[in-house]
Image 1 (cartoon, rainbow, N blue to C red):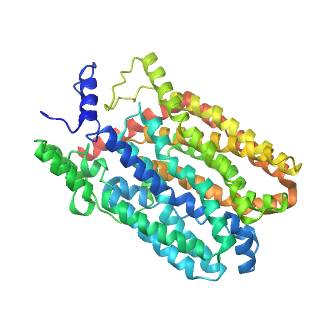
Image 2 (cartoon, helix red, strand yellow):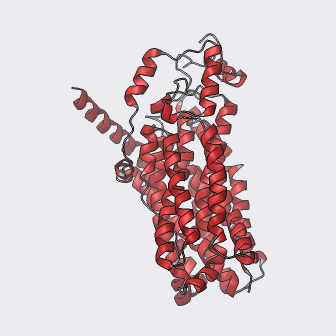
Image 3 (cartoon, rainbow, N blue to C red):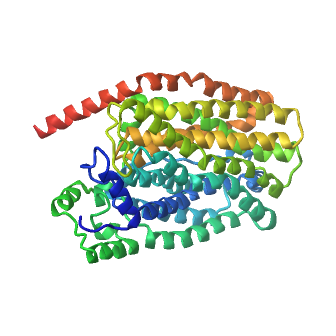
Length: 499
């Protein structure tokens, strides 16, 4: 290329040129500013998943009374993540369009219904629409960001999903306190519709099977206003797509009906399943805390809906702190291990990690956070049981939010490392375990507390999660061998298909 896309990208390319592996192509043609903007948009879109699942938590008692049911019957409906595999082949934009269309239709139905059966079915539909946005936010990161920078960008991508658990209960508390609870879903419909209009206009296509490194113009279905403007400027600067590269990308482009099979292939891998199980059990405790807080603060501290909603702020505060700390630690630890292994770290150039223990580099950060999370959940239960000063649960909720979100960021980065080219599918598999186990915990928390008390309930959940943690230690030592075995198997299959 004779000209650069922008000053920031030029700096990236100059840095790459000075490195030993400068012959490698830049991983992405998006500038640093464009990457940050795209990830920020994806992060805001992912806000709708926790927003939708948490906004009604302060109003659980109100809704249960209105529908003449118990609060344990209201739980997050989670559908299998069909959309993630679709987005890894057909592109991010068509997948986002499907997600938001389903989501908005479900919110309209929820705003108009008055029965528990309709609430349950439509919540499942609503969750099916919104849950895919979390996977695709990480998919955007996988499209543009190499392993050496992935920790920071994954943290950035998770800000939306972190703000959801803290801000949405406040919104829900205000709406349920001063309006009819149906307005919770009217709010989601209006807010989601306005956001989707702007999002649909400006989010560019990033899927590597559709636009390559970002230099290939997307097909009409995947096009956006920002794509048109960006490629027009590239053409004016003499940056014409390579015909051979464009032809290869078009061959990989596939528009198929959404299927759960890509996600299930990820789930059935031994290394992946170990990570998914431990993450799922950790988040089961997290969702139990989130769901149980509504009843606990009503009964123990006699809080109103709006006061109860404020108790979710410490969780979000801890998560935001984690975003600005954990990501940097993850990238630092990657560089430290890469230096020991003699692996060159070049900005915006993908490194070959087939013989690099990426599992150790990531899990050395994740494991301490994992144990802190579970110990925080355990302590939280006993603090509630002894009805200590309000400062006790507030501090513990902050610690839980910081540690669990940090653990999630690291493990999401690892999942993308393990499944290059299938970043959304890998994250969807993670969310599938997390949401299914979280939904079970949400449904079980109320009867468990009634039978065992808060202390033993949260102790049980934490100890189950800790008991399964040795699986992560096995991954530290044997994960690279499992990954190499999977790669060899994939290469043999590809060789047979081509032969």
